[in-house]
Amino acid sequence: MKTGGFVILVALVGALGGLLFGYDTGVISGAILYIQPAFSLTTGEKEFVISIVLIGAMLGAFFAGGASDQFGRRTTLISAGILFSIGALGSAFAPPPSITILAIARFVVGLAIGLSSVTAPLYISEAAPAATRGALVSLYQWAITIGILGAQLVDYALASAKNWELMLGLAIVPSLLLVIGMLAMPESPRWLIAHGRRDDGVTVLRRTRPANEVPGALEDIETSLHVQEGTWRDLFKPDVRKALVIGIGLAVLQQITGINTVIYYGPQIFKLAGFSSDAVALLATIGVGAINVLLTLVAIAFIDRLGRKPLLYAGVTGMMLSLFALAWAFSSGGSGSRGTVTVASLMVYVGCFAFSLGPIVWLLISEIYPLRIRGRAMAIATLSNWAANFAVSLVFLSMIDAFGTTATFAIYGVMCVVTLVFVRFMVPETKAQELESISFRPRTT
Ligand code: BGC
Image (cartoon, rainbow, N blue to C red; front, top):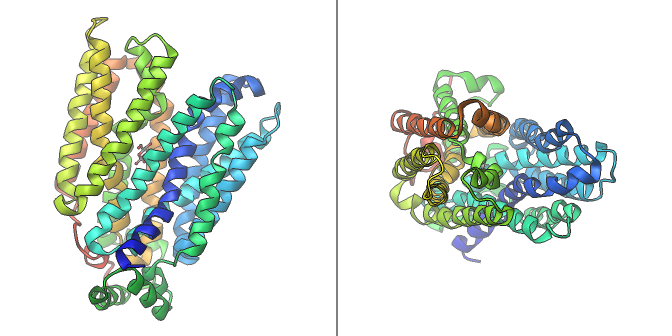
């Protein structure tokens, strides 16, 4: 197989981790409607069953750092695939009325999501040649969006049968594909070389990039290894600290600009805007999911040509404008145009996220850290992403109660302004550079 084709295959298999991330976080909104009566859940238990996935994801992200640095990216992804499979089967076969098995299974799914959300983008980023790395890591985000849309469609299709078991259980298919696929894929060449397996690393470099690029890539990797062995403490050395702040900042901003209020609460938002029928609100949400998938292709097409920062400026500006339009639509009382403006603004908002903050946050946090501590540093950024996701999802409905819909969306709009300033002054452009020349490296001492 040609090197270009092979590296796309590597990225696609790694991206299955993203597909499962999207499916498993998306599917619960529809499934919970039928889980609740089946298990006679109280409101508290219902919130627990939903949020335990995010708690598992935080823990999984935390462990993913050490695991992927120590045991390798490939082994960690295979383990994530096994956990995804156990979680899918466990939740599909959880016997009511006790919620114990269901809760444990959802927690295991969360662990798997956390592990793969650190390791999959990292694995793809390290396997990719510099010139196409942006597009290849964006495939991961594309897979997330396909997973979310897939979950929405499955929820819709199985709603009349109230088949929550199948909704949750279907995740077994991509889970097994991830395990089998990763067994056939090579380890990251950078990880191999960092662990003294130079020859194996060179073999993988030869399979993933044109022959004339191999010596340069190898030299860059080896030079970057002349620094001290990475430890958790290295993360706080001055040079790395700046990269850490950038990664955490981006990861948190991706969430506090409100994306998951739309992804998780889409039907509720459409109903607030005056769509009275459940079916129409659900279909509008599926429309938003489809825009999310389609517009991620824009990032894949342009990210390596235009660069990361121009796409971030354009996308986050579009998100900001559509959030202010949404705030305005909700402030204009029950006027007839409100529904149309809401739908249009939400589509523009999600579309702009899809080609900017969505893929580029995962890409940048897989690019900006030095090899020795990359797994651990990415784990901290990803953990912050999950924690912010958890906080925003938890307080969204209370924010609407406390401040009203207009103020809530306006606050997310202001967060977009903060993001633009952060990108302007903090974020480096990483287009077409080998990972080793991007890193804020700890100095040799
Ligand atoms: C975010 C998720 C979000 C998804 C939407 C991802 O990049 O991390 O929180 O649900 O994009 O497409």
